[in-house]
Image 1 (cartoon, rainbow, N blue to C red):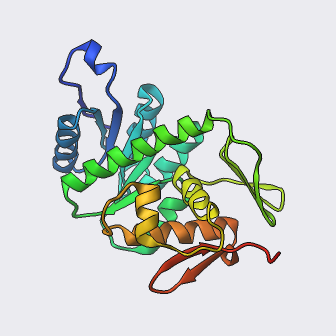
Image 2: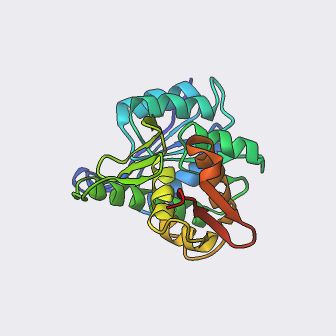
Image 3: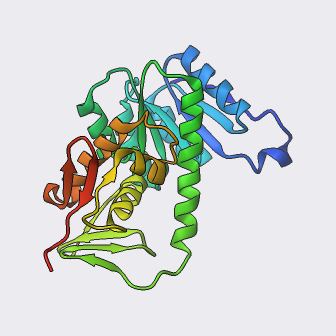
Length: 245
C-alpha cells in the first residue's frame, strides 16, 4: 500500500486557513497533475493510491473534500465512498473512466455529490471543487439559520433546519446535493425549472455544460423519494409534483 503526500507550500500559519482536499487516484501522473492544480488554487492536498489508503487518510487527516477515482486497487471508489460517508459526511467529486450513466447513478447513490468523466480539463475540475465547497459552506450556514416550520407537500416533509427529509414519516437519506436540489424544486412546487436554472441555483454553474449532471441527480433523487414526485417536461426541465388541493 503506497501513499504519496503533497504538502502545502505556505507556512504553518497560512496552511491553517487552507481547505484540505484528498486526491484518490492510482495513476501517479494523473494524481500529481490534479494535486498540482489544486495546490495552485490554494488548497492543501494529499494523495492516496488505493482504497484502504484513502479510507485511512480520510479518517486521520479529515479532508474537506475528496476527488475520488472509481477504479482503484484494494477496493474501488464506490466502496471508499461508502466507508468514508459512514465516518462523517464529506463532499465527494467522483472520477470515472467510462461515460456510463449506470456507474454515475451508483456513485451518486453511495454518497458522491458530483462526477466527472475522464478525460477532463483541470480547469473544470478545480471549478467544481470550488463550487462543492461553497455549497457545503452555504448548507452549514443555512443549518444554523432558524427557519420557521417544516415544509410539507403531501407525504413529503422537508426540515430545512435539520436538513432532513421524510416520506410517509420515514427518514430518507439524501446527499447534500440531493437535498439542495429537492429544496430548489420545492421552493416553487409544480413550477417547471429548466436544467440551466437548476445548474445555476444548486451547482452555481454559469453555463449549461452540466445538464447531464442534473439529469443523473434527478434520477437518484427519484429513487429515494418516489419517481412520481418529480415530473419531467421534455426539452425543458423538471417540476416537483404536489397533491391536488
